[in-house]
Image 1 (cartoon, rainbow, N blue to C red):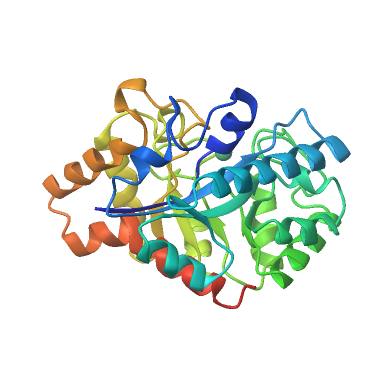
Image 2: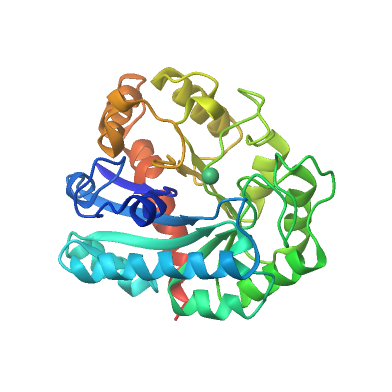
Length: 310
Ligand SMILES: [Zn+2]
């Protein structure tokens, strides 16, 4: 099977825990990921809510540079993706197609010119907030009712001018609708399951899911109990079924969130996706649909989004 996963925090764990990307005890490493027939992976730089301003900016930059060092150390295993051509050549040479993201707009340090630096370092996605409030807006656990700030709206426009995709996972609901009003291009929720199945501040209502689909965007299914409601394959299936019932066939993928949330140790990291695949096969999902969910929806989306990227 082929896998294209929209979200993990493995880079942060590599940065603070001195793990290597090639092989480690985390949820994801190159050795395990490359056992799939093809593997695309979004690697996010997670920004803790305790970090703001210049300190946030610098930490993000250091972690992005670490990603490039890891890629340079493993040139036959991983390629950092800048554009659609890179994506195709990574898959052709059976390397991990690594898309870089930043999870938390606090990494901008309140400065629009940081976007240019991030773009230079290969960032293709910015999750606007983590759970708390930052210069761009309010996260889903900030306790604030307001949505995006003026800086947040300006940041979206600036990001889109660089073809950097806004990610609404972790944002509060008012912020979400401000993004829908502001963004001109497709948006994503990289790791958010359905509030229609399990009510949780991190989960998307049907209206939010429909609004993302309307932009031509993508939603990633996370596999953590906290958002699913139950740590079972059956529960993953229920969330997928709900999104599919809203006509999400071309808009649902996985954003597992390895190394960013609690996923049981005995699920064994990224290779558990083989078992999820087999479980859905037993639910009579056809190969075509399985490939759309596990790989092609992501591939098509990012290929298009990166076609005009430099
Ligand atoms: Zn997250």
